[in-house]
Amino acid sequence: MERIVHILFDPDAAIALQQAFDIDPTLRDEILVLEDDYRYGPIITIPDAWETRNVWLKTHLFPQQEDGNSAIFQEEKLRRQLRERMETDDQLHVWIWMTNHLREVCGYFSLLPWISEFDQRVELIYLHNLPFLNEKYQLFFPEKLSSIPAREYPKAKRLATPLSSEEMMADNEEWQKLQAQNSLLRGTAGERKCKDMAVDSYDDQLMKCCTPDWIRLTRLLNVFRQQSGIDIQDAFWIWRLQQLAANGLIQVQGEWFQKPMIRLAKNEQQTAADDVSAHQLKNS
Image (cartoon, rainbow, N blue to C red; front, side, top):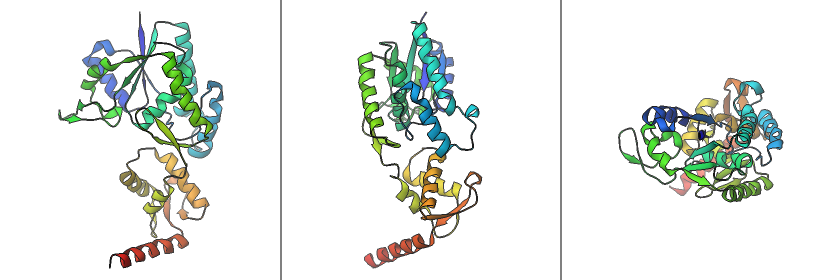
């Protein structure tokens, strides 16, 4: 009897899919959420090299977390177990649910090294540029999987498309090209595509959210998210702020893990004031 493992890269979407099981019992099966966010950090294309990514995450983003207490640090085990199960059970199929949200696209690519050899047993439900009905029954185009109401999932399952090993290997080659560029940050490059970006690409935008007056870290990050529209978790932005502080561009009062106060360094305050004066002169 065929069994399905539903793969999600958006943790919040698992709740909606679970609710959809009650609407359409034929969907009911195992859910596997892979939480590691591959929009940032080293790319792994060989399963045995997983420790490289774990060390980077532990060093730069999650120094306070114990490996055994974080779902992120358990992903190598989850992926390996999935691969082993598919090797021993030819009735086991994988359904990958994704939109064109960058986290989900990168999650899809990151899974390929583990499953690309299982021809026609991996199905992709790619919900990009397709209309759904929101909670108010208004037509909308979802930006990420978790924005789709549970009642819409039974409709979406009809889009499940088997992937050949050739298709997956071709996509995996694109992922390998990104790995060769040693990028630590990725951006959207069209449908089911991503590109490498300089890791400091958003540093200027972070700097613009800092002020000459002390501002709480949580408030700074809220302002940054509102202005940028980027939903990468705080740990990455805190690391970037740490780099700005190390370069003398901002000042920090307090420990990073205790939500410190932040402001522009003295020299940057003068630069900001000069920019404002120049803008005022230009518009006077």
